Image (cartoon, rainbow over all chains, first blue to last red; front, side):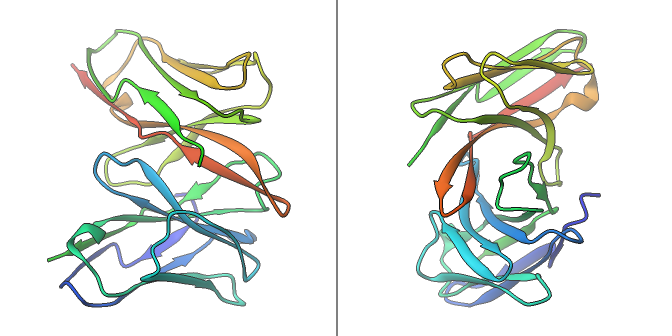
Amino acid sequence: DSGVTQTPKHLITATGQRVTLRCSPRSGDLSVYWYQQSLDQGLQFLIQYYNGEERAKGNILERFSAQQFPDLHSELNLSSLELGDSALYFCASSDSLGTNTGELFFGEGSRLTVL
Amino acid sequence: GQQLNQSPQSMFIQEGEDVSMNCTSSSIFNTWLWYKQDPGEGPVLLIALYKAGELTSNGRLTAQFGITRKDSFLNISASIPSDVGIYFCAGRAYSGAGSYQLTFGKGTKLSVIP
C-alpha cells in the first residue's frame, strides 16, 4: 500500500461526457502528479501540483484540467470525452518538488473506459 | 521533450534465467530510477541511482547509472514467477522553477514461464 488513494477504480462512460478522478496523496506529501497510461504508451506525464499550485504541465489536453485543494487532495477533470481517452490514470505523490530522492508513490490508478 | 528508449518491449523467459533491460536517452539525467508495475497496481520503486557510474543492487536486482548519464540498465538474476510485470525506467531532470520531473520509458513487459 503506497498510501496514495485514487477513486473511482473503474469508470465506464460515453463519448462527450465529463468525469472527475480523485486522488488523496500520502500523508504529508505536498506534490501531486497525474499520469496517463495507454496501451503501448507507457506513462505520460499530464500535470503536477505542489501545495495547491500548478508547477508543471506535460502532454495534457485542453479538455483536461486539474486542481489541488487546500487539504492537498487533487482532482483531474476530463471533459468532452473521446474513445482515445480510455486509459489508466495514475496519481502519484512526493514530499517535495522532486528535489530529494525523486521517488514518486503511485496510487492503484483509475481505469477509464469511454464507449 | 525528453524521450527515453527502453528495450526490449517485452520478453518471455524461463524461470531461473537472468534478465537484462536498458534505457537510453538523448538527454542527460541526474537520477535514474527503475519501477515495477504488477498487474492491476501502480508502479513501485525498485532501485534509484544518483551518480554516473553507480552500480546498485537490491536483492536479485542490479542497476547501473551509465557513465554518460544518458543510459541505465537493470538486471534481474535467477528470475522467479513473481518477477512478472512491467518494468519502467525513469530519468529525473531539473525542469525549472525549483522542480524536477520524471520522464518514463514505455516499459518492458516481463513474462516468466515456470
